Image 1 (cartoon, rainbow, N blue to C red):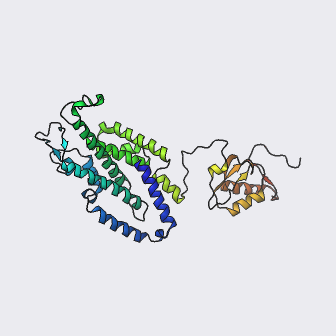
Image 2 (image 1 turned 90 degrees about the vertical axis):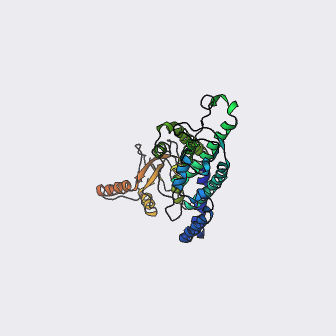
Image 3 (image 1 turned 30 degrees about the vertical axis):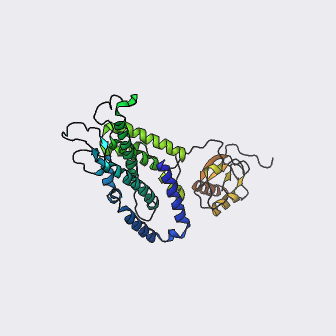
Length: 342
């Protein structure tokens, strides 16, 4: 959900940048965004710190050496570092950290929408991981306090692991899963995302929840919009890109394969009624590297695709073999040669 919302908002802002005068002043935009970031990020310590430090903090389990507010629990005793972490009630510092992290999530979401696509190398992986880690840590703390509050009357699926006094909920693991889910929702990566998260955490035991989060985020993201952030920017900028996921049947129309620019008509070639003069006019009036071959201009069912260089080579060979090549000569792209003049 966060990934789809981010993609829609970022593409909307990038379209506004391209169609307005803002795109003519990229340096001013960078300076304004930098000033706004410094002004609003400084009061909150979770936005003031480095993003990589924030991710490390959210991934880390609370222990003896962790003195941050996010690990401020009531009556949690760490007398023996070899013993399991006991379950405890969240203290004032944890609740303070929760609303600060919520503000940090909103801030990072909004500021990343504006920064990705600017004329500076603004990142996407680290902010996405940070947003997911914040959401995951908040959910993990909530689950931890739920188990603490209802320790004696837990549902059946919590029994066993959570029946003793030691903590069965690891908020840091929730942060890892949340980071993988948000990054997967933004980029729509699957296998490579699992590899990245494995290299970050170094824990083989976390592969299964990371895989589940990655696939769930991709399915939800594809249901809300098929394109990831990179595919959306490729489509927005009009870069030549043939998506391997698109499949076309034998009844596909040429308009489904080739989209004209600037509302120009489709430049197509019919399979058995295009003359040499018409073919030369099409190649002269366009700069396409290839043309779809259709049944006729009325039905426009797609038959195939022919490259410009093949057309030029065929016409040159015909002129070399024949004494003259009239412009009314037919160019046939089928095995069944039509009978002319019958």
